[in-house]
Image 1 (cartoon, helix red, strand yellow):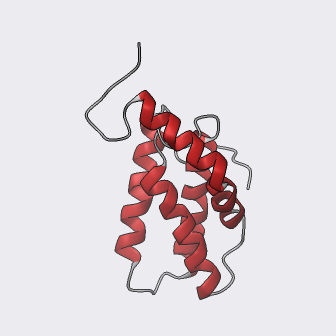
Image 2 (tube, one colour):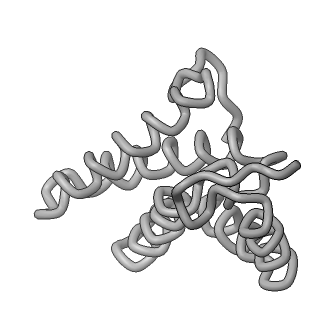
Length: 121
């Protein structure tokens, strides 16, 4: 018996579709590759923020590859913090703070702390 919830992604058929999508497009690999960069200029920081935002939007159990969800949520959180520290004077700090809050909530919902004592880069 499968799981069927009210959200469009909260059923087994949609989860299979997302799994196939991630396999075919290598979306996760592209996001993680970008997140592993250092924010060195506005262009690069914007790319890192965009990659983190993909996880803000899609970083859920039935959507994101579950074997990597916790680690990828944490990576996005850390890298978005770096972007925020590098560009504190930019007018979109409130938006970045809201994105960080979403990531922190997602990490907490899976039983974690967004900033554990030791986290690899």
